[in-house]
Image (cartoon, rainbow, N blue to C red):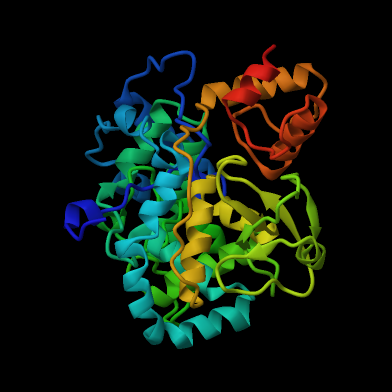
Length: 402
């Protein structure tokens, strides 16, 4: 990636329904029935919801004064790089330039903060720093959108049902709890704010005061931002002492079977890390093919799923993991990725519904490909003589739809 400021500026991600993300595994879809109510009338109607949540009238008026619908929303919701392009292209791009080199230069100045993260939260501090780099290029691009405008527009259009309305109300609550002025609320067009891009509900639930000044300021305080991201990962189930995973080399003859085994069992089978790091002596890992068996293989842990809760996209989570490895001293890897465009969200939903009709216990029918969903796909592949890599692709879709 070039060092031109325009190309450095990250494309903010839709985050998962967790503290920091609402990435859906595909483009957002508008409600089947168009919202006939005018934007102005909709915003006015939100007062009843705000009042029910204890929001002061003065706060509501300050948050809604002069709001107009954001005309960019329809276009922006259709452009999610984590899902719209081959995963390898996304990951390779993020292993270069502004997300790795500046992070490596920052590490010496972050030693105290990183040690504090490890002691207090038990979370790998290099993963936290990698997330910081992925989200805002280390605090340099926090977003310039008026989040009250974007959140209210998303809520008016009923993207994700009532999800964004809740975030809009939470943003007002945040104004009151932390005493931030109206002008402070600048962020991504999805409503994510601060150096580590928290949605308002996540800010209220997971943000912590890392610098001891009595305020949780994710915009202006680096310690607050990093400690809050660590607290979020801890709250989502981070397992102390376990890695996120490893890129690995499989021995000849080993069936690429998506399964979970102890680390030492994988080692005895001849599976080896290719990044110069070492498998832990305890714990388990799952064999994972983010681009199918034709692409790189990984062993991942529960902590990989925790990273995914920050942004529900394998492209994002693998990027974070590989960047964090660089911070541990691992070399830059030239992984060979196939140029395969991921299934569209509509295709993933069709696959899930068809699998359910065939008697499989599908964990969701909204297009999300979770670990559990990959195990369902693996079982289908095993039963139909396909390579059991657990990866959803066109071949699996065609077979499922027969």
